[in-house]
Length: 134
Image (cartoon, rainbow, N blue to C red; front, side, top):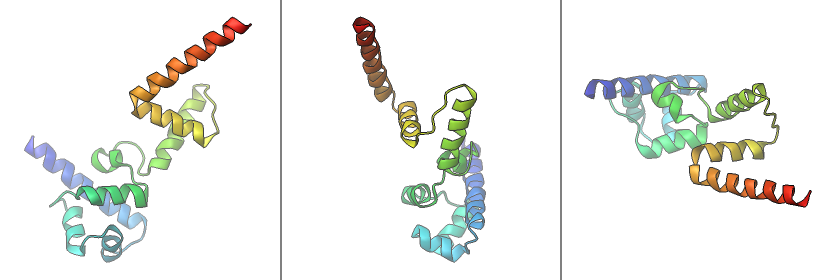
């Protein structure tokens, strides 16, 4: 288990370096943007330490970084790219939705099963009422 954890930390560090270079930032510039020291960023990039939670939040909020990508190299680097991929997948399945609100709702429903259940229950009541009125 320890080796697997170390591998995740090292690979996440490499992807953190990829992110920094994709924005053409020096290590000092990136460290300043994240609110960490340059040496801490270096230690994160080489896999000596895993980024702290507040750093992960900044990476997500300020750089739109997908934590799935950072941790597991799963999906696109940025969360907006992930939403675009979901929209394209839905279109290919015949579910056309251009509205960002609809995409946001679908994403929220995917992440929160209680919300999904409540919205579906409301929708079924709505359909039942429509059928009654016809």
